[in-house]
Figure 1: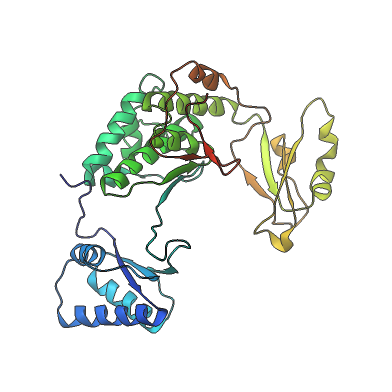
Figure 2: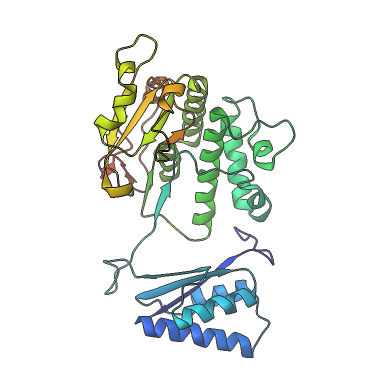
Length: 340
């Protein structure tokens, strides 16, 4: 049984490559002309042929679309060297040339990657995804009062994703299920890495955590964060630390509020200035200079540490060795998942 059913309107990728940028553009032109002269092939059939029947060279492009006409427009842009929607151009990863292979790494994001309706179509399009979601639902059932598939399908009465105790387990389950689909399609990870709650999904996918342990951990984490929501506020302020803390300085020693700071590199911020992350009472943390649009309020945060009870509870369980390397977001090195 196919891991994924591709419908008539489902976007698919066409993969092209060439030894030089000129060769890549020439291949795009040839494919465009071929389709114009011989209309009728299904986009998914063309995608399959491009992946399985052609060699891959250093310079590559991915053209994404759902209709042949859209592919024709995108291929025309690629052939002429014009930027166009639905086309991504890049080179072979360093180190993969000369007969070597570049293996994929599964990267699992933290909070904020969700949206209403995520996974809903895949429940019907992929038996692999639906089965993995059912397994996650069963693993979560002892720890939550709602039903995972009801949330994904938007059933009346299901809790909203805005709640931390809901969105964290739901996003975890979708990540784990997506990884099952990727692997069923033949995409095997050379390593996994995750940020924040994504680390729990990564640990499950690599085999370092059982599905039951992962479900227990993410459900408890979501419940803790849900209970802390509203007890603090946080703003990301792209200013030097002294400037960022001056307006709220009195909170540092005040009995009615605690001020915490975390400075981090300001990559992407204007003029490369460092940013201070200030946590305190919401009505004070959200204030800034008049007319200053650089402060960004972030919802759902707290001014105290998250309890580590689930970690201590899991430490009493059996150690499990992962099937693939689990990479730390702290050190950048591999973690031995048998160590608790």
